[in-house]
Image (cartoon, rainbow, N blue to C red):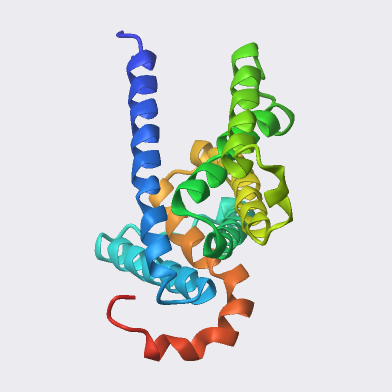
Length: 219
């Protein structure tokens, strides 16, 4: 019997993860452009409303839509967590650049490295510690440009919201791994996570729902 090719699987997993990061990175400039036409609450709500509808259409057309009853609490947690993180990101991006937003949000990798030993029992080796310190040092340079007087300006609130979204996503990433490892169908679980992502946005979007019919074509 041939031994499983674990090295090949790991290489493929790393490649797909990097590809996901590249694709995710393209969303930041698009979000920044979109915020010129629509407020962050309406924007993020419409994004996931469309995504949810598309996923349900795809899964229904392929007859693969099932409800994962064994992971329903975990799926609810992941949906609400995902929604809170995206809400923080969109609001934060109204007062900072797309490049800074991408950096702060993707610090989630740092928070995952710090939280996963406690939450998942993973090891935090010397390389991870050095990586965390380097990343945090980079954030200080990018955020302040060593001009610490800017900490009293309005942009700081946006930066803090973006950093908070990265922290929230760290919990999403850590517990999403549990879902991936135990779920029989990742796409089925994602199909239910997407509409649940809308839950934290609902209270905010009601106050701006009147803007939707008036959105220009560019939006």
